[in-house]
Amino acid sequence: MLRVGNASGFYGDRFDALREMLTDGPLDVLTGDYLAELTMLILGRDRMRDQRLGYAKTFLRQLEETLGLAREKDVRIVANAGGLNPAGLADAVRTLAGRLGVPVNVAHVEGDDLTARHPGALTANAYLGGAGIAACLHAGAHVVVTGRVTDAALVTGPAVARFGWGEEEYDKLAGAVVAGHVLECGTQATGGNYAFFTGHDLRRPGFPVAEIHADGSSVITKHDGTGGVVDVGTVTAQLLYETGGARYPGPDVTARLDTVRLEQDGPDRVRISGVRGEAPPPTVKVGLNRLGGWRNEVVFVLTGLEIEAKAALVQAQLEDALGEQRPAEVRWDLSRTDTPDADTEERAAAYLRLVVRDPDAERVGRTVSSAAIELALGSYPGFHVTAPPGKGAPYGVFEAAYADAAEVPHTAVLPGGERVDVPPPKRTRALEDAEPGALPDPMAHGPVRRAPLGLVAGARSGDKGGDANIGVWARTDDAWRWLAHELTSQRLRELLPETAGLPVVRHVLPNLRALNFTVAGILGEGVAAQARFDPQGKALGEWLRARHVDIPEALL
Image 1 (cartoon, rainbow, N blue to C red):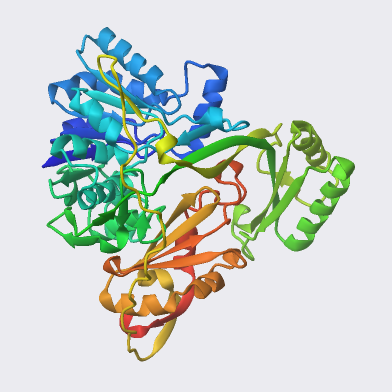
Image 2 (image 1 turned 90 degrees about the vertical axis):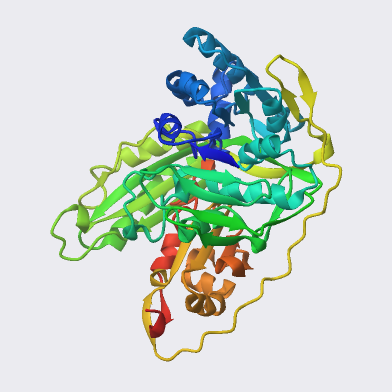
């Protein structure tokens, strides 16, 4: 058995997690996921200021406290904190180890940086698999840092190193991918951001651990005595997060999410079994970030009576003031947070949000800020804003491209400096939609009651570039028999009007009693562009759960 823990789900996650995971229970490997689409843009800006940067600096500060402890406990550390400069981070770790007097073998994985092939991109990075990590661990590395690898590669690499799986042992690899996907977002697997959070003490959830077996099956758990909970619901929620159809492609293997079986294996233990895998696709995903232009925002506070008239007045005034200097994109959103006869001023207020974007910094900066400030004494009664208008800031645009796997370099740089090229997969399989999952027989029911969907279904949502996914699952077989027939793509559009007119695809995952919806284009050009109120789509699922539908009383 291989015990793999996670101590970071994003750049900025709980700083003490690395130490806690090393002290609170046994581990063989400790992973850290520091990269996301937005993170790559942030690191790209760091690198523009200083070519020596481009990696997650927090990781170094965490190692300063824990490197000696990890060596003492013989725990290998594998992290993608190298970002855009894994070689630079590896050197920094060696320097740190020398200063601390801790003997440590450091290796890194590179080859993902394809920026030179994409003129105009700030960053362009291929998502590599776990084979380079496995090579580094085989060579005796105690710390392996990578650039952009798939999040699951942080687990598949150590599993291949431990069990010696061949590249065509797809079922075993797919099992490790599923375990890696559950671990990658840290405490989201142990009750964090969980739809049914009120049933558990989630004030400080522990980070997850996967006990991976040689056949590819695993048990998701956490260290004894740590907070949070691991049950079938929390694992289901994370499995649905930022995924799409039944086929979950990656550079190591395509995992079939429609084959995953979950069962409670004791308190805070969920067994994952039955995962099937297929040959990986012939291409690998490449994440591109470019600077899209400049952005500014002003939020006007509208209080009391005649909210709509106040909003119309200030909008007309500001649009007139901008005149020919109007930015290329001007967006107004009125949020009616006000309540009648409110007992506090804030509860009597609504918010009118202005967002402007333009390639010219001046058009979104001084032009907009001056126009807004000059209205202060000559607009609607009670005029004020949540914060003084600023100068604006650059925003990024994310897009996904694809490259032939055979043309993407993948290099393991071993502790002694030897460079080992990782070959592309010998066999590939073009990605295609799986056959639709079988629907259960409809639930025969009597009276219905109008109530929130979330009383009988959980949900979790997230972003993939400009698209969002919304995973919805039922907690009982009867609820699944109802949900599978009630929540169609059209019904989702009706419940979430912001999705109207957008492509919505429904995927059925019967083993998980789940539906996974992908909504194309709802997030515009991605999180860095901040095109909507919830730029990462994190709360789309909770909005859906709050909508009222006719639910069989037997389920309530």
